[in-house]
Every structure is written in C-alpha cells, then in structure tokens.
Image 1 (cartoon, helix red, strand yellow):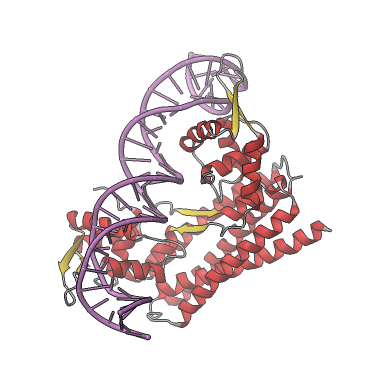
Image 2 (tube, protein in one colour):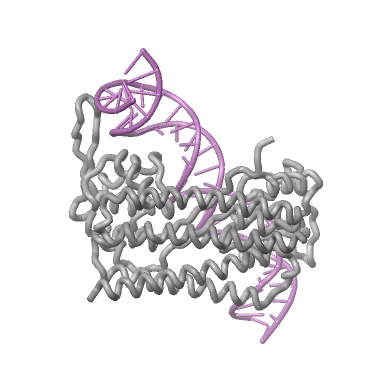
Length: 178
Length: 178
DNA sequence: CAGGTCATGTAAAGCGTTACATGATTTT
DNA sequence: AAAATCATGTAACGCTTTACATGACCTG
C-alpha cells in the first residue's frame, strides 16, 4: 500500500471536514492552509480521480440546476488512511524558500543600496500577507476547532516575527551605510 | 531574453564568489543557503551546461591528477545578468511548506494526544537544524561578508523563534488536556 | 446584458528529488 | 586494504504551475 502523496493528504483532510467538490476544496485551501501548504486545480482534480480509484473517496453527481457537480466524500478506508498519516511520527517535512534571503546572501556583489531595497520589498510582501490573515481571523467561521485556530495564529505570529526581523535588518543596514 | 531560472540564480551567485566545479557549488549550497534554498546535483550539472550555451559562464577542464574536473567561471554577461536579478524589485518569492502545520490543521480529527506528539516532533527537527547552523557559525570562514552573515543570523533567529512557538503550543495543549 | 462566481477538467512545461552508474584520489 | 571524499553525470519519476477550454448560473 503506497503512502499518500502530499496532495492526497490535503484532499483527504479537507473531505474529513465534510463532503466537497474539487472547487470547494480549492476555496478552502486558499482560505486556510495556503500560507503553509498551497494546492492548484491541476493537482486537485486528478488527485480526486486517483483517490476514487483507490477507494479512499467516493464521488456522486449532484448537479445544482443545469450545472454539473461532483461531490466527494471520504470512505471508511479513506478516513483510516488519513488518521494513519495524522498519527504517524516520521520526520515531518519543513521547507522554506525565500528569494529575498538568496539575494541578501549574494548582496556583497551589489552593495548596501541593493540590500535595503530587498528587505523593504520583502517586508511589504509579509505585511500584505499579515493583513489577509488578520482579515481571515476577523471573519471567523469555525474557530470552535482548535486545529485551524492554532495554524492561523501561527501564520499571524510568524508574519509578525518576520516583519520585526526586517525592521531590525533595515536599522542595521542604515547604520552600516553611514 | 528569458529570465533566469531559480537554479540559475543560485549557480551564478555561487560562481560570483569565485570559480567552482559543480561539486563545489553543491558543497557551498549545503553549507550556506540550504536552509532557505536547496539544490541537488541533478539541477546543478544540467544548469551549468545550459548557462554555458547561453554564454553566461565558461567551463575549463582543469584535471587534478587523473581526476576529471570542469571549473566554471562567470562571464561578463553572466555577471550582468546576476546583478540585474539582484537589483530587480519584482515581488520576491516566499514559500513555507510545513507538514506539521498541515497535521495540526486537521488534528481535530484525532484529538489532543495526536497534536502534542506532532509539535514535539517538529521541535526536535528544528532543534537539530539550529545546532547545525550554530556549528556553521562557529567554523566561520568568510564572515567578513555581510550577506552570508545576515542570512545565517536569520536562520538561527528564525529557528529559535520556531522552537519558542512550539514550547508555547505544547504548554497550551497540556492545559487543554486537563 | 455584462461581469463575477461556480464548476470541471486537460496539456504542456517547468521544477526538483532520488537513484543509479562510474571511477580516481585521499585518508585512515 | 577499506572507507571517505572528489568528481561527473543521466534517467526516471514525481510534483506543481500555468494556460487553456468550456459552459451554466447569479447579481447588479
């Protein structure tokens, strides 16, 4: 029994929260896990088909008016596989990819003017993300669940930390420049 | 003129620090940018060939004894392209992928026992990474350069913050459990 | 009736990891 | 003599994004 693909994990997880269409799953991901785990339609639809072949989900056609709609649901086997993953204690994947740090690493090539611009530009990106996360927090739907609350709080606090790091770096670079 | 691929940026950047073999570049990446930007041999060697076709690097055969060795160097065009990227102010890429947060998000499915285990396991991963970064800091080669110093400091402080977040989450989960 | 949202999918391209294969040199 | 390191590469696979294509329904 092959282990779940990264995409399969998210899809099964979202279906554990209720039956959904592929479209619904994409919306949910964008409003919840996007800041630490993103998915595209190109991953979701083929994955739903594979999961159905493996008997981990079942899809039913539930058209809304004349509009085609496939609604998927977890099977018992699917829920088992999800729990298995949720309880497993293999080394969890953790990855950061930060273009700004890369530019900063090589920045001696271009000098101090270049550095400050990059840090500021990075801070703007994170500030915008922070706003989105705060907006999300305000329009709370299901904050009775600890899981989503925990991860959203992570996103907000993490963004705040990053912004603070930028400010300190900017201050340091300004001193350096004089 | 197509823009530089992600891998090309790192390769050019490393060559700006001096001429290197593909092998050297991999070692440098592992000891410096790995914590925010990793590369594998499978990316480096083909990329060096493509960059040479584009005239951004030149390779010379410099065998050491009977051991084949291709040493690459930036061309003027290559350096220009690197600077162009380093000074550009497009939206910088920033990505986090964290399996632990994903498990936490869905953790209401399995309850509190599951959550604490995941957070602890994540903390262990980061603690190990932090040790590696500190070891790197101790064996400083070229800390006269601000760029590498800045990014290493980021890695250390970021890891420290993550560990602290874990501890707080663990405390919160322990309260919750009672 | 125009623009937005709901809804589904595919194809191509690009990106990245892993495993494999090879062999010389250096260190223990 | 064995193990580690230096050195180069490829092939297969898996993952992800992007762009495209289609069409119904809903809101202003």
